[in-house]
Length: 545
Image 1 (tube, rainbow, N blue to C red):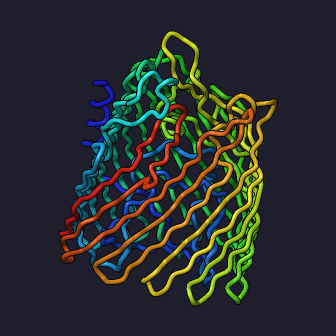
Image 2 (image 1 turned 90 degrees about the vertical axis):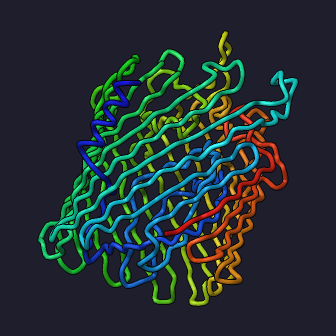
């Protein structure tokens, strides 16, 4: 641990303060800087988007270009701690924000943020937060578990410093983050306690002068991660150097050509893992004019060291916006998802990898859809597609050993999907959204009979209503349902979460918030055997300054 902490401290002192790389302002991409006035409604703890990765088309003269990194829809994530969202407001929002909340089962929410506007060109941000819980959870089956209650705890601490300086023709960004997660596993599981420590330093530059014939952005990141108490991997350390760059030039009349590069160098210590390098090169041609958005590219993904597989996947998009606020699109995307320590934690924090895992590769995620919008605030999105994943990451059943443990492994999977989203907003007084996605999963060579698909989402549905009757009050009520794939005539209990939340501002600088979760007291799992909270609440105070 000491080398990791010393390395983090040295990096933070040497690199200074941080910010994430901004995309350059061009005729095709506009950067919109929005200060945030914090008024959070605590969102659904389990609500993570696992819809197909599609571009969000906007019926406007200028298209907003979104992150095109592939995102595999694989399972209902294990992240059960609450997340928060702030409502965006115009510039000149209060630079400081503090939130403090507490609830039953030891639910804790501490968050602080301050933005220093050092000059017209310099901004410095400082963030700190602690979220977690500590309380007894019902196992729901004393005969199977051998006990009625599990004394569970899970606390995550994070801190960040960010700094941005805008030069005449480019932006310089420097960032640093630190994270610590402490939690425990079920009794008799090995090891009983776990600790994840992470940190990273980021440096990036991006050209902002539209008059230059060639635009360019580049960044490098040093990422450190330590799994504290894994079986056969105690204090295993992962050091990653991630370099990303992209250059593009205009051909005139809405055309441009470019190439994007990403290289990950991973080095492991205190375990039996092999070091390796993963490279991704994406040349592309893009066109945007007269309502059309076209992109033709290919991802070329070789690897060196462990996992020497040469992969190729498409990066293609076609979209047309009709004047009547109707957008049709078709696309095929893909790419590599590294199974590094950070992603393994996201798949399941309670599971340990069975040796070094191959990277998950999205061979293709092809989708077609239509999006319709009206001036009255009604919107409809219907889509369907196919997704193929090689070495898809999943967590397996408990091993039969002296010290049982939940394990991580990989298997090839694919799925057909279709879904729809419906939304309506009336003058920011009433807003409702409804969405649903159905997936038909299969696993290669009988993997569907081995538990590979047991926690994959078969159907996911969300419905939420937000009411803003007066300026100072905002109320939210929602319901989320997510069923799992049937395996050997059995199906894991579905997620069934009815929740509600509210915020109220006494003054511009002082407010309160509350959240009620799992109001129907349903018993379901995000990870094999691990119970989640029943009815729970969280309430607190917010300060802006």
